[in-house]
Image (cartoon, rainbow, N blue to C red; front, side, top):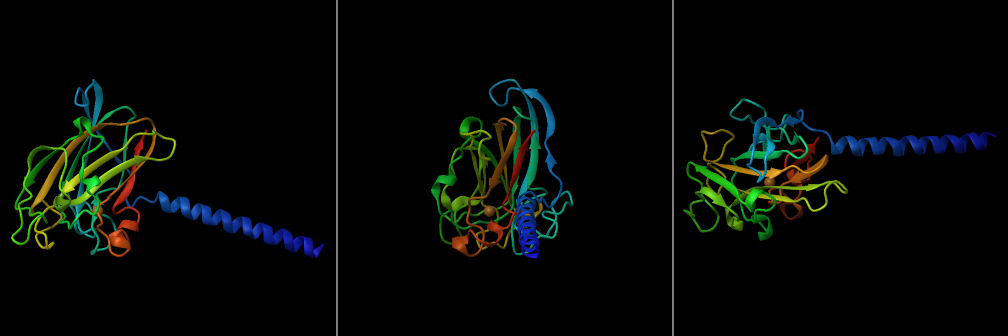
Length: 251
Ligand SMILES: [Cu+2]
């Protein structure tokens, strides 16, 4: 009898441990540093190629995750000062079927994209993005003083030496097979990373694009630019949830 109780206890303990690990993993995958950023409705129009309710999301890509943005919002509460981050949130929500216009203000310098594929725009309306450059932005396409990374209009592709981060999004399995969005974000500031900061006082690139939200479900996004340390620059910040990754919740 005692042996039976012992075996039952061990089974119970194993069940509790496995359940705790499961809860830990699921909590880790959805722990947003600040609440979900809800897109702002801006009326109904034909921006996405058909009449649809349109919403707007404004985010930024910043060199210092421990800092604040123009609105005084923390880029990433408790952020590591040596790591870049998207902010002020990494989780967003939009209505299903809406036309989503995003503005991403890019303040960070880059190095070299190691896969030219992610320099190509995909999944946006017209497969293009609109870029307006502010201040002196220098690419990595040439040696010092470097080629200017100056844009004023629509582009469909950036060179691997002109990129600071990417905003790349895929649905979770079973949500919307075929949905894929890739937006390369051009470098800001100088290429030694000195002339960068979290506010509009610094050189920056303002990137605007629209896409049609798919059906309800969660879509994960991440940066495909190698902006971390270790693991071929895909470790550190690239592996820490919430800095260079997050979710779009289509509701
Ligand atoms: Cu990045």
